[in-house]
Image 1: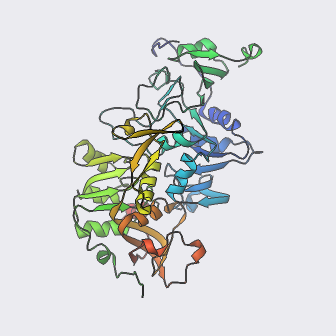
Image 2: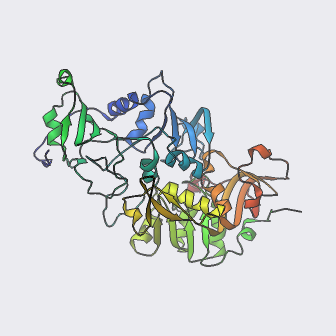
Image 3: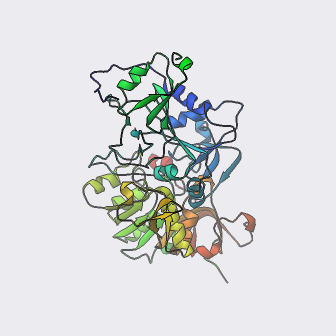
Length: 232
Length: 231
């Protein structure tokens, strides 16, 4: 455990955003109903393994969301939660907001993948507000998603742009939900939320366990089988 | 005989009073009743409370209503949008009130309002800043927050097609909050490009039954941000 500042630890190459998205996509089971948050999680849609059928949900009223249309085929009435143009896939359905959040809150969605400002070692998530006093607060559907969806995975850079750890003992930013996160994909490693901190699942190529310890402000447990600990 | 058609936009919104609570359909641009909002701006009602997911884009529609200083309070989940600082400027200056509501809680509060449910318990927001001041209760070992229903004097709705009875169908993700708002408002006013005689909509596909709708006004074509921005 360490909270060394950026000045003391260098930047590691790790995984690219697309590699992170591909790793997260590889963990999504065939037949899953999934909500992807705005930002890096949106990249997951491009990395779904071709042998799996995953139904994407967007909280503004669509199951079976497809990729962005060609510019000439944009329909302003067909958008995702980030208000970007999308398409429908065969088998898609439209519904109103109360039904959409019944899917979310009622535990009908298998997984949501969200971004984060901070993830706590006890599964707490902060991703809706920096807590800055001059910021206009905006929450959208984040609190509903973490309270209702069966599993919550986080896709985020390991540290902030300034080099501060995003994986922390306790969230200092306003909470989105308490004890809600199951798994975290960063550019340096994959973690499960364990009983006593972040459980290391695997490391990015060229990243050592000590690199992760230095950049994480919470306990990290190396739970990998001994024969996998040199695998990168 | 039931015929909810009204002659024009100005007539449709003529009796909206100052200090009314207005639900405005739409998620971003999709489903935003831009023509009705501009008719309301022209009508002049002020000190309004607006219930809507967002606070408008650019400088038209909801952003224009807010920018014209007709709105005292906004109840919404996401009062930020690319390309519009109308709300945030007023908010930072202390000139507009905000009640921030998680999106699913907002939808369910409106649904409850239309369904005669006074309040409900939801797990959303437990242990967060948005739980402050709300009753918390444990059911089956899980904590929930008490949330009150929302109703309104008026709902402004955009539909793809309507009949004279007020039966509505929507277009794709432009449906969003509108069916909930139609039920939750005392007076529901709809703009639609197609308004036809009863019998033209397949009853099996009607999304909002006409009982929830009071006025229907036909509009020539929907104005969208790219169109308006070009003007």
